[in-house]
Image 1: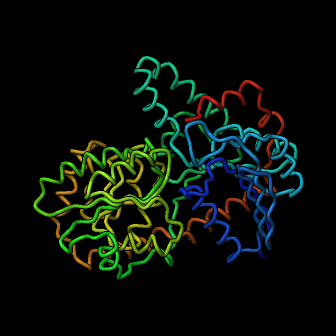
Image 2: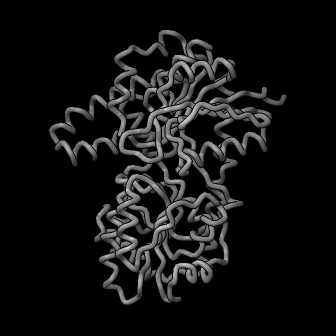
Length: 414
């Protein structure tokens, strides 16, 4: 018997026209649903306007929302009445939320009213990111006071969900340890058709004005403080001592754009492509690079690392930073001991000693094909949807959020 066609509604706080991992996940999921199932999809996102767009089995509700303080790309999805009205209009079978802020509580209220299941996807490692921010700007004493409050808040929120999905074993272990129940681990994947090895090196090197013997290091992602971009600059200073020239290419946009623009203007060995929407274009950059470098230490999985590896390119990340699981098949695995420029440069030098060949790049691509396809991710996720629909709903006593708890969501705003 074929599974019942479902209408799935995603309420997405972290959605930006400047791309990002959550946006990539959402659009890849929509593509999978349309190509492989009879399910329909509703997307509710923050925007500069109120608008509704419908096409086939998909509907997008843009909710006019204020900008997130300190951000040029994200807005706070707080329009409760508009969100509830959109959900009532669409009458979905299941809700999914991707953040622990106000929109999650609004989703819980809608799930209770409509007696439907709601799942949370743990897209960002909020506790670690906030702990680091508090430690840096307020000191360890404030951190020790606030961190338990944040953890308790997350437990209260996520234990009201029908299920909480995590993409890595590390996140699963942490959430389980603090008392969050109904955890489901589903690894993320990548688009193996778009991100595939390409013969683009000569073209990209010519475009960047690089000599043939240059080592091209690449970073793709949001240009924000939590990505430790400055550590990449420190890494490049260290690598100036290396006999071969090194060049760092940053692709992305975000709050640190002015600093990146200034640095790329001042340093000949640093370039910036401020935005790249095309997967084909990104695949050209991934394929041309000698190494993809990510200095983030608060990631939940790291989609960009899968994209780079699918194009055959080795990834350098920080131990315990969140990208570990996507690199588990790398042999030998070399990671930076910490986020410092010194540790990153040291790891880069160790990687150059391996003298990788095209065979190594081919094997890396093969591991992505066998272990990290979107098809595997979304087949597991849609199975979870079907499992929950019909047997699970959010009861009033489970989903009812107090005014204080809902307002406490501002504590997690970064």
